[in-house]
Image 1 (tube, rainbow, N blue to C red):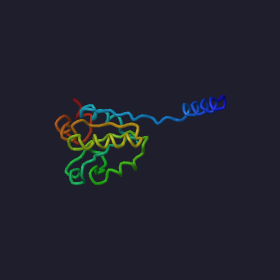
Image 2 (tube, one colour):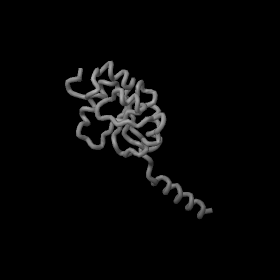
Image 3 (cartoon, rainbow, N blue to C red):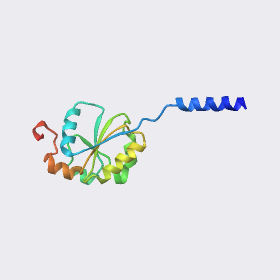
Image 4 (spheres, rainbow, N blue to C red):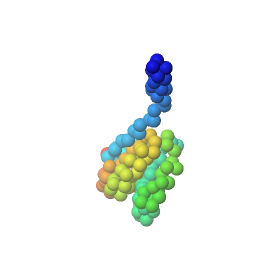
Length: 137
């Protein structure tokens, strides 16, 4: 009986010392705040802006500096990004980018930022697709 108690205690202690998976940090930003955050990240090699719209949508206009990874047809390509990078995700209205944020979070990505309302709201609030201090309100 004592052996089983000691074995149980060892298993319990080993389980408590196992490395825990770090939870994702997800932040939802309105376009104006996202714009300011992008400006703060200029020159930061570990910051990436990801447009998850289709290539046709992307070519019709995107935020300068964004890369295109089509959520509908190539969402698994998102997993090739560095999990430790800070990622700003957006789409047309916010629906696909929210799905992408959830997907990345489930796969261990740590620092995720989402532009509320997507590029539609960005164009209304920021008015320019080129992040610049001139666009701050």
